[in-house]
Image 1 (cartoon, helix red, strand yellow):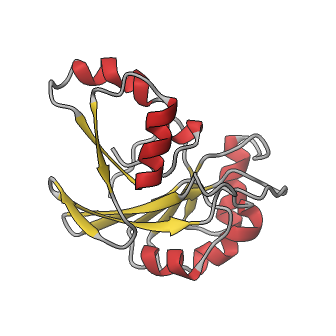
Image 2 (cartoon, rainbow, N blue to C red):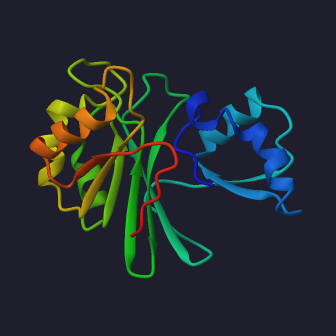
Image 3 (spheres, helix red, strand yellow):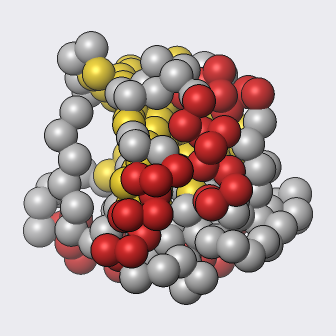
Length: 188
């Protein structure tokens, strides 16, 4: 498991993971995250005995099974105790970059995402702004110029139009962007 940050929407389900994981394995699930994220989660949550936390620093490359993972810090929360990562996963010659919570695009994130087959990125806001998330209708033209194969918007918020309309609007802005949805399966 890769944690982006310690906000409850990103890590609050860890205690519930316990029962699900016990049905599949007796070994603790490895949870990769920044040290600050691990500390925040441990302070807040109980019953994390099925988690084996693995501290990760930005920039380093790590092997996890058949995958290679890397992380980069991205702007999201104002509070220092909630540093946020975007993750890059590579396996079998394919790459995915997962950046679910971002306040603004950065040159570091663009370099980090370069060449990815799929960029999964924050799509929380539409025609409205909030300090902690992208406003996708104004950000997508820039994202469309990034050298990535496809873009899937996640973290879709209440300001976004209904799914079918959103698909049409995204297509008009950037043909390689699609909204994610619950149960979506993406083949790289």
